[in-house]
Length: 165
Image (cartoon, rainbow, N blue to C red):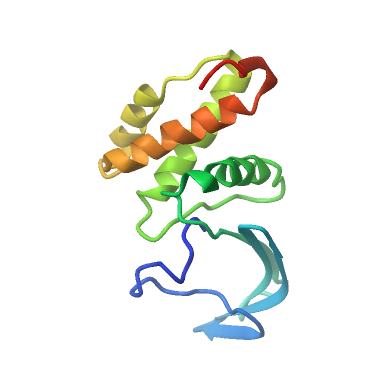
């Protein structure tokens, strides 16, 4: 989750418990572990559906920084890199509206992978392609600029690209 709930839109539904459990219809979500490290909070949930015997374990990662702050950029790059190491099951990335900061995350992560594989990336082309699937994808210039700043931060921390400012 890419938005601190304390600054999030108050209409956004909180679908997890901070501790204990919550029940929504036939689904129960129990918080079984919480860890905090700098700007990253990790919670482990056990999700049960009344019609199924086996629970599903969900790792919920929250990046808790305001991304307009340049000091948070290295931490966001670390967050993107850490989510690449999750190997079990699908990964869902979201923010409050699904097209703002999550669009930045998706674009930056894909472009970092391009840089590692091909040594080059094209942010404009990537956003253009993604907007064909979702016309609301990355609507603001601020989010596009944030994506470029994240990539510059990533490149500035790589030995091979140490001359890029």
